[in-house]
Image 1 (cartoon, helix red, strand yellow):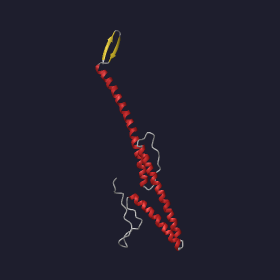
Image 2 (image 1 turned 90 degrees about the vertical axis):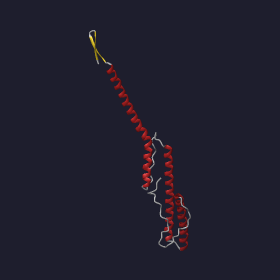
Image 3 (image 1 turned 180 degrees about the vertical axis):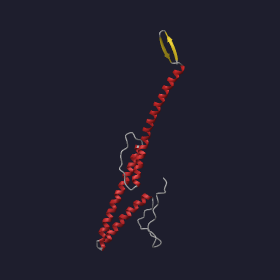
Length: 175
């Protein structure tokens, strides 16, 4: 800084080094404001992407635990809305299929309980209905698993061998 005397008053005027410091300070403040704005903006944008993924992950965790999740709407400005809508349709379809299976199994149970107390002809008729319904359920399950669907019971080569094929383990399957 330089000290100037003009007439009876004294003034302090910034020299070339003082002007650079003011400009540098102003630039630093602008850079901090820009950085803070960018930081806040990036958090908002990443939440728009990560929020839906987090919600879908929670829903899948519920499904793996054996429960159908309660679906909720995404936030107004979230991304992946079309994908989430497709995910919701998939969950609704799975739930309705499971409901149909439950109702079919309830009907089969009712037939079996009635057959236990029925006369021979009624018992035979009830067992035929049970076999038809179980075969239908088995066919639907085979279709979903991509296996052949014949409604004939599997025969085993030896009396002690299991009649059903071992289930494929999904624990080691990669997607």
